[in-house]
Amino acid sequence: MRFLTRRSAGLAGGAAMLALVGAGLAFYASAARTPVGPPLAALGSPSQCASYGGLPLQWQVDAKAGMVPLPGGSFTFGSTQGYPDERPAAAAPVQVAPFWIDQTEVTVAQFASFVQATAYVTEAEHQGGAVVFHTPTAAEMDARPYAWWSFVKGADWRHPGGPGSSIAGMDHLPVTFVTKADALAYAHWLGRDLPTEIEWEYAGKAGRSGDALDTAPLDAAGQPTANYWQGMFPAFNAKQDGYAGLAPVGCFAASPFGLHDMIGNVWEWTRDRYTGPHQPHMNGDTAAVAAPFHTPNESTVIKGGSFLCSPDFCVRYRASARESQEADLATAHIGFRTVLREVL
Image (cartoon, rainbow, N blue to C red):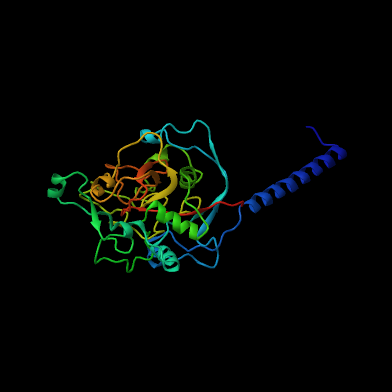
């Protein structure tokens, strides 16, 4: 057996001490690069989301209220298993700079706060209507395509079902019937932006990779871990996730990045124009039913799927999934969250 001499032992001990100090400095530097954000609402269960008021802690006090800091990193953009517009996965890892992102989708309460402060009028309010979902009858399904969608005059973020409906009791739900311009106006009011498609997908994958990301969001017991459609779309929703339509934000456990509802509940706007292969709308073409009242506009990427995505129709409850949406057409299944890009 080889023994260290006193000198070699001393050198080895010194080297070990330097290594420990170096590791400590590296850990400190890493921690310093990812700051601790403002306090966040306790969410992640049906009881917690049901009692949430819809405004983040320190709202209008801390500029980053409700936001989570994400460290920079690399990830595989795209999919090897999804639709053609998601493939092929990027040949090399894509690098993403650090940024902040909302813990949840922007709520009705947050958007109402913005409108109260600015007197902002949404595009749907200017246009006089929006696209609303309903469960169609068999006769409606026989009568026209996309029978679950209708352009309803008077529908907007305050009147999600059209005239006579209201947002009373909905403060903790994601705001919908907002266009890309509406989402950007809100984001800019807070000094923020909409995420790029790459930023959104990086946040959605949350450091994970592999084919499991392209499967339905289920836990080990086979229970849904997101709000999406279970059953035969659009006729029957089994509601195994507990919700027939929109759910309050934060009803399901957070991702490894601490984010809620990146998958399901509502599609989310990105700031990117849709390019590349185009797939047909998998929840039905909302622009088609709006055609008599609306002229198609710039196609923008939306991400994350919604409460209308089902295993037999859409199948876009996945972080890699992407869809094109007319930038100025407000619908019942699209919301958003914001980002803040600054050196962490």
